[in-house]
Every structure is written in structure tokens, then in C-alpha cells.
Image 1 (cartoon, rainbow, N blue to C red):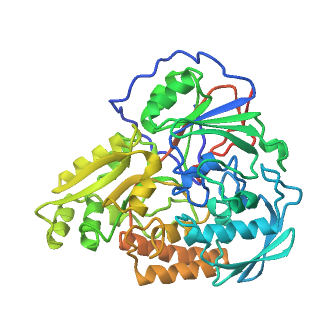
Image 2: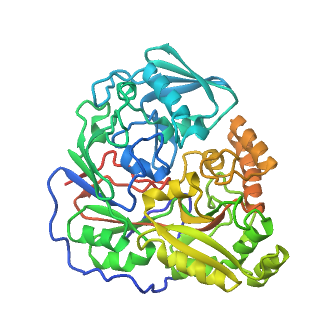
Image 3: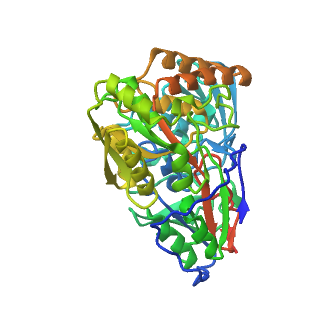
Length: 508
């Protein structure tokens, strides 16, 4: 087995057996699949095909083959040229984008500065935009010439190039926008692949875009993303040759190795967490939130659910990443059920707190949810588990605000300030209820205005300390990725942002 790690995200030794997973036969693949077609099994179906309104960052796995972005990301999360071949700050409130010439959208419409203007204005204003917060600093878009766009800001935002590497920077054909096409029914981008079929919850098919500006990126003639929520089913799909690669939880590591397929592990910034609606239930009381932190035995979860292939951190980042504060420590998440009971009693809910939690359907999260449920019950807290389709979770929790809490994974962002803006600020899309603190809001402004890396890290550390002290969320663990692939796969590499991209990936 190959082991690949990022930023010192090294698993801790000490594996335990996890029961309850369906056994996977140890025989090799039944078939090798069609030539020129790379098939990947992904655990999520996109919430929608409209890149500006898709509610979770993981939607980009399915959307980005068709929707190219202004900025791309390296495997370790560094911004790289995309549809913008270069960018530069003309002053703290003006970001110039030098655009790539000769690019066309899948409908033949040329890509230019006017297309950038149309997309950013639309992403900021369309009903249900999930990227409005990230684009909030942009006051206007100047079309200086056909291949130069200048983003005029109302306040500094050092993270903007990174912002443009995610859904906020996805470019839709301006003709499709002008024609009012239903972007949840058809994808009209400028990406390396053209989406030819999307069956929600089943499969998304792509064909190579012959006019793509980087021909080597579309290494496979065709791409298929099979949407399979259940981890054991994904693993079996690779074993039987239905797909070529997938990702499974650490609990299936031994079974994956028994198949004889190529198996590797790698750390990322992805973590499983509780997001709490701090305007509901008793979660507005800091003592209650701190009680939940101390009620969780994360080491037991790390060993029992994740076989030791996970990292525990009180922060929304892990050691080795620049936004992580090495001086903070993990006292805030120390397992102390007696302290949890005292805090609940002080908050007036010691006689029994009950709350509803939505989790994704499938086998990936059920063991974690049940472990947390049992640990909370030990301190008198009842957590009701409500499974829901993964592609509906964002809408249920962040738009409808139907649940008190959500247990899910956080898809990392290219810049940590994007996580802050989305999750902790008053207007953040991922902050149901909108509760925040004045100190958090002020530190967020500072980190956006700071460009010196050392100074920016210091501000970010102060900001992270505020998040932890006020329990603005409850990180549980950072699980490692276990990637399983057949020997025919070439070019699939781990990515710090946890979202597989298929640039340069093909099959023998």
C-alpha cells in the first residue's frame, strides 16, 4: 500500500477492527472497462448543476470538469493560472485579471472580460447564490479591454485569487445566461469536458471538449462520475470493474487491501464536524456548546470509527497548515464528561437536552453519528439522527434551517478566510442563524486586509482562537482519504483540498 501525506498529516499508529461493514470479495476486477473512459465513483451527487447556486463546495468535483474557473489550484492548494493566465494587485482595491485568449465556451461563445463581468455580477445577485459572501468585496467589474478585467473592491480581500478558484470563479457562457437557460438542467461552461448526461443520484457523463486551451488536461477521451453514497458499494464497484477508482472511509482499509487493488492514504484539510444553528435549541448558550465539546471522546472515535487514520484538532485546521495556531493546544476539546454535565446544569438544561441532527445517508457517517449519539447520551443529551440525501443537506440546514445541527464533512477552501466568511460571519451562507461575535468580524476584516504572509498568519491565529473559545463549531476528526484504484488509472493524485480533480487523469 502506498501512503501519501500532506503537511505532516501523518496517521497515528494503532488500528482497531470495525465491525458491521459488508465483506468485499477478494477476487480481482471482473473487467477493465472501455478504452479511453475514466470512471470515478464519488460519494456525493451535486446539490445542483448551477455552479453559483450549488450549496456545497464538494459539488465542484462534478461541476469543474465542465465549468472552468478563473484560477485553478495545485494539489497542495496553491492558486495557479486558469482562465486568468495571470493576475496582479494594482492597488489594495483593484485586482487585474489578464485573461486567456482564444477560449470558447461549449456553445461556441468566446470567453472574454465581458463574460467575467456577466458571471461575477450574476453570482453576486442571483437568487439562492451560495457564493455571494465570497464575492461581497467586489463592488464592480471593469472591462478594460477584451482580455483584461479589473475587479474593483469596496474593501480589501487578500483571499480573492483563491476565492476565484472555487465556485465563485466558475465561468458560465454569457449566452446561456442571456438566454435564461435552466443551469440545473444543462451545463454550459468552458471546461475541459462537455457534460453530455446527468442523471441525478446516478451518473454524470462527459466528453472531451476539443477546443480546450490545455489539451493535456483532458487526458481521457471521456469521463464518468458515478454517484454512489454507500462506501462498500463504491469499493465493490472498483473491484468488479464497474468504475476505475473511488474513495472510501478508513474503516474499509483492510477490505480494500484484500481486493488486490492499488490502495493509498493521504491527509487533507477535510474534517467531520457539527455545525450548530446557534439561534436554535440551547446552542445560543456558550456553556452548552462547550459541554458538547467536552462530552466527545475523540480519541475513541479516532480509533474505533477511523482505525487510527485520522487527526484530532480543536481547530478547523490541522498541524502543519499555516492557519493552524501551534500555541493554542486542545484543552477546549479535552474529554471530560463530568465537566460537560456541570456546564449543562449551569445552563439550565442538565435535566435533559434534546436536539435534531441531519446526517448524510449511506454508510460513511452512520458509525460516526451513532458513536457521538452514545457519548452524548452518557451526559444526558439526546441527539436525534435524521438521515437525508447528501445533495439536500445544504438546503435543509443552511437555507430552510430545519435542523438544530448537521453532522457532515467540511470541504476545505483554497484560503482559510473563505471558511471564516462562509461559516462564522453574520452573513455567511454556512452559518445558520447568523450568530457571530464582534471580535470574529473584526479579525476577519483584518485577515482580508493583510497581505504579508507572516502578519496574516498571526491574525489568522487570533481568529482561530476566537472560533475555538466561542465554540463557533465543533470539529470532530480529520479523517484520512483512502483511495482505491485499478492498475489502469494514470495521473490521479491526492489533493489537500479533498476534492478530486481529473486534470491529466486517464486510463491505460
